[in-house]
Length: 129
Image 1 (cartoon, rainbow, N blue to C red):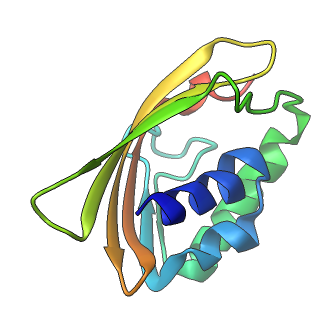
Image 2 (image 1 turned 180 degrees about the horizontal axis):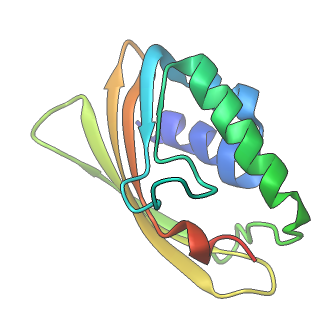
């Protein structure tokens, strides 16, 4: 759980590597952002590795003008197990350089060592300049 989560954070928030991020999902994995507005810049739902790779690469390209980086020394997370051994919850406080901290919650469903379904509860407008 912790290792998969830390690989996810590194691939996404830290390095913005869409290929590495997509590789953490099962072939039929789903990435959902229920708080993302329909038709907005951040994808609301991506299904399958190829869609995750393409959708997140497009998001990272749009966010390229964002010169902030994640301040690992000020960022924090807590992982919670659930009654279902294939589900865990992450509470995250992401601190960006020269910026406030953004709090969010993610719910991970894991299958065969990969992320089968991720619900990312955050406000996209808070993580882009």
